[in-house]
Every structure is written in C-alpha cells, then in structure tokens.
Image 1: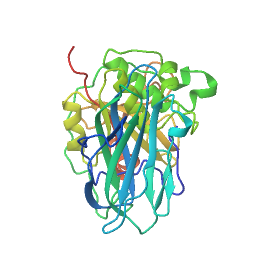
Image 2: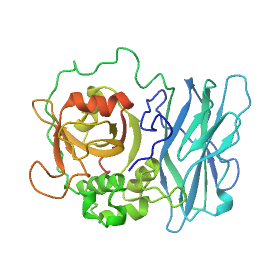
Image 3: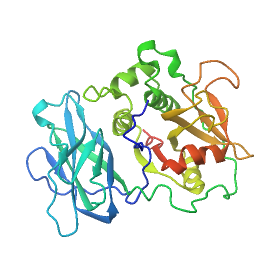
Length: 328
C-alpha cells in the first residue's frame, strides 16, 4: 500500500518537468552526474531511473537543488539499489527542504527552480535513463481542470494475467499492490515470475515499504522492461501510451464509494493496472485488491472514466509507465 505524508499524499504529482537527463562526465570514480536543469518553480521532486547494475552491485541516486541566485543544496539521498554500504547513504535534509522516502519537498513557500542528479555506484553500474517529475501544490488541481469532456474511444485490452495480492501470504497481502501490479506487467511482457518474488525485490528494508515507486520502475528494468514515472492529466496522453503498447500502473486514492465497483470502499493510497478502454469509455483495470475469483467480483474491473478522473487524475495522474521490451 503506498504511503501517505501528512495531509496530502505523494500520489499528487504533476509534471512541471519531465525529461531524461543526459549524463556528464563523472566527477569522481564511480560517479555519474547529470547537468543542471532549470524549471518553473517547484516544491516537490521525484526521480525514476533505469540503471544497469551487475549482480551483487549497488548504486545510490541523489539530487541537488537550488533557488535562483542561491547556493546549491547538499546532495540528497533519493533512492538506492542492492547491498548499499551504510556509509554510502547521504543526507536527507537541509535548511531548505527534506526527503520523505523518495520525494524531495521544499520548505513551504520556498520553491526550487533547478535540479540535477548524481548516481554513485559500485563498478559496472551504468545509468541508462533518469527522469524527473517536479511540481508545486497548486499544479495538481488547478481551477477549472476538466477532463470528462474528452470523447471516449475504445482501445483493445492488453492481454494481462489477473493477479490478486490477496492470494499471497497474509502478513504481506495488504501491503503489496505495487509488486502485484509489477508482476502482472512482467507476465504481460513474457517475463512471468511469482508475485512474492517481485515483492521481495521491491521491498525497501530501510523504510519497511513495498511501494517505493522508483524501486518498482528499477526492478522492471532489471527484468528487461523499461519504465518511468509520469504524471498524466489528459485522456489523450493516456491513450497515446496504450496505443504504443505501454502498460500504466495508476496511483489512486479515494473516500467512501468514490470509485464505484471497486473492491476497496476507501483507500489513502492504492495501485491498479490500466489495460484499455471499452467502446462506452469505461476503463479496463486490473485491481489487485480484488480476490482471485472469476467474473465481476474478480481482479478485472470496469471503472467509469469520471470516477478515475476523481481518484487518479485530479490527484496528479501519477503512473508507472512500462514500455514494451526491445526485441531480442
């Protein structure tokens, strides 16, 4: 189950910046540093990455931010992979902001306007892509934001096995919506493996979480499936990705009854897999919170688009976007 921070969840992210960063020359052995990227003022930054890492290797991903005319922050720890030495974990706070799990938050009213990334790694690790999402709280639900007027069109359902997180061990079943969605994606791309195995790989022992978003993206990459975090706020953008063969794992949250036909009456944070649209515009969704049974009570659900707009898009439209693997 995704975590919630304070009065707003980190599911409420909108892409004020969303672009792969091009590495610069390493500043020191084992380091790769991206260039400074200047953006409109933002108060939150989250990175996702696809990094090649050898067996038993490790890496640490950090970010540095600054304000116009100000000095850069220290390097701040946003994520890692593998058996990371304790000494390799860097700072997570400075006077201008702090990291909550995998998201850098500015002090209220003190936005940043530039960022860059750094990867520190054991020999053999190589960054292939680093993608950033940054936003301000006003971005994710601006006045007059309406998507429901977009005409619906059918998109053939991607063939995806239906997996339920409820089928796993009781001690983790309520916590592994993210690993279960990733397991469905891997199986759809002919990289099937047990959900428990995916959950073990995605588990972050430092935070005691299975739902750290960049870890989901990185694990899929280690299995040959490229991905990234995106914030999508139009159905056209969603349709483009589905048309291209991508699968979308949506971060949702809602109060009592806001998502009609869902297995959960309410949730502060949950992940579901979008696979297509019916001709009437209903979204075809694999909801891992449903039991592993046939028929409408099972994992495959048909949700109204206007409901998804409320529980997903109006919360920022954050999604894992997984692309088809390269042939061969």
